[in-house]
Image (cartoon, rainbow, N blue to C red; front, side, top):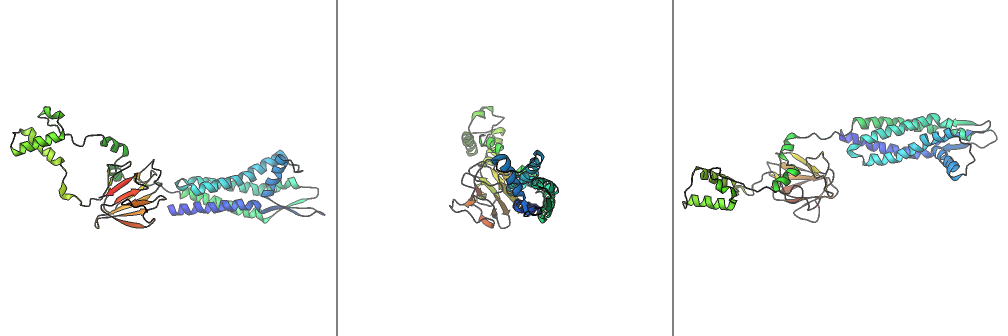
Length: 345
């Protein structure tokens, strides 16, 4: 659906470009006996109108209503075609704007094709006829196609990515990370021994070791405290074992762990539709990259779709883009630049 929506948006860009080219297409001709036949385009209407009221060079007798019709149904669609063509190119996920823009421009063009003969009255002389040319029919056909593409853009607009509740629960919030970073890493207080409330972790570990060696006796509360301290000590037995997580080293997610489920693909970027969002990181694209964890092979895979690239192991050259690249456990990954660095574990 997203590819189809993008196709129609690109089609609108070319149609609006064609609409600008049609400004120079002959739309009417004036015929008078004993006088040469003159052919006029929309550009001639614009030129003569501006020459009359701005440069003062035209001798045409143009009424106020005719000027208004030229400004609304000739000048305005030309300006909208230029503006909306640019909007369609950069619209991205907000391409619904392009759909409405195409419809508005097309409607103005259709009205012009019905009023072209009346607008051409500014060139009318005695016994002169005004003939509609094939260019008006082509403008009408182009306008109809624009309306169809505009409607299809609105219907097939890219759907926002659905939020995965499991991912929301697994990936830590930035503010939550900042709050956790200022908290002490361990805080064990033996309720049975209130005097230990101000004792540091190092002192508690030393006391526990003395109890275990038999240097001092302990009660039931101290025994529980020993058990808690033992649980708090890092387990080196599994050190280096692949876990399928990304550990933040620098940047917004420094100190955070981003876990992956087997075969799960996480999207990284500035846009809120991503799974891991970097709202203020200028070096990170709106949809920067996707990373997948292969639990069976114990490997990560990354596809970089960004403009600034991704870098591994502090290399100066970014990884190839738009291709799946295998990353081993232990790889240092910079997303955009080294201000957002992660370690794959």
